[in-house]
Length: 118
Image (tube, rainbow, N blue to C red; front, side):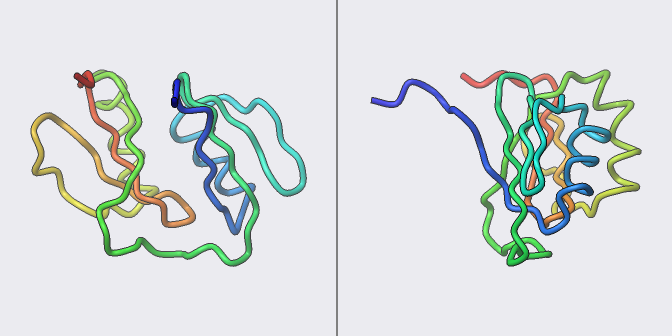
């Protein structure tokens, strides 16, 4: 039986750019880096970035995405920075406040503010 989520691995064609995005833009903490990958803490999640020259550069057309938790005040400060740095793939039409953006490798992310999973 599954007891939790160990980590998420995302392919990155430009590892340095992806590390800079997650560390500098989203505040993830760099735990380890090697020539073809990196581990970052994103809250309680281990995020692995793995260099892969075959990674897509645009979003897939489906709704698959990763949602990070962020408090309302932090999102207030971060949203204009993220909108300037990242393509927005969808405007929020869901309940609660969210920001839908693409990372440097084209992975979809949602930053929900002040929402608990129930």
